[in-house]
Length: 345
Figure 1 (cartoon, one colour):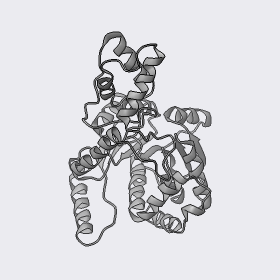
Figure 2 (cartoon, rainbow, N blue to C red):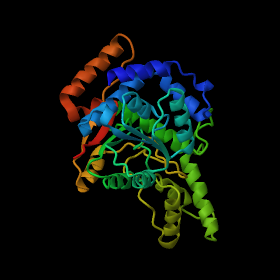
Figure 3 (cartoon, rainbow, N blue to C red):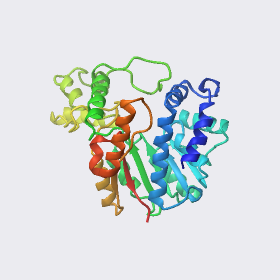
Figure 4 (cartoon, helix red, strand yellow):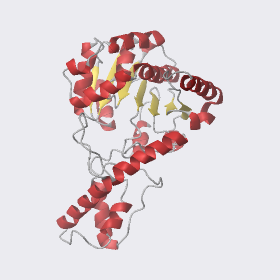
């Protein structure tokens, strides 16, 4: 696996994102990846190695689904490693097109590029007849609106299909929790300035302000005062709701005066239009529980730090990795990411 990652790293080092026929969003995202290429390669090597371990297969035997693939790094590494079948899937259509363009430029195209969510995955599998060995992802599950429902649906996959779902939103790590909670507060109350390469569909307004706007519009639609007493509190208490769920909360408020309970986590929040969570800090054991209820074995594994930094910083990463390897799941508080793993069988 290390050799495949080294080969892919050399290929990617020669890529100029601004010479590719891709969107500004993908140019920005890919530029960020290339700026920390050794760490990126180490990360995806770790994830693909977990896929091999979870399936008990060699790279050449592997049929892998790169779920929420973004720029397609996992797909590229799987193809470079000789995977027999590679399926890339992402809910953002532009990413699907751009990932295919990048892969073509490297002669590492996936076998299939699928646009959509988990239902699109099941539809594709039914149509194609493919039974993948593993469905894998990185930095996807912390953005899924109904994460428990998502994992319940993944529990419907054949038992021959392993799951390797990794996330950098590690709530158990106090440093990450503090940094990501600050991001939550920022997007909730301050909003984001439009910047080059940002997804056009992302909400730029403060989520709290945007929810109040959406709720007011719903009250107008229902034929009442768009600014009823309690609107501000309703907007605050609907943190974590989006789309139709916001409209239902408005209707319940008018009918009963009831206010919904906000997320138990004090800062978690999501885009009120798309439901995209801003780095959802969740307990991965809840995801394990859902998979086990579906009859699948599952566990949480801590991730490792990639190379980078000099002197004391590099030494600290090496020491942390030694501790994480030795302590296993007990070292989740020290890990840069976690992985929910459900092996095949």
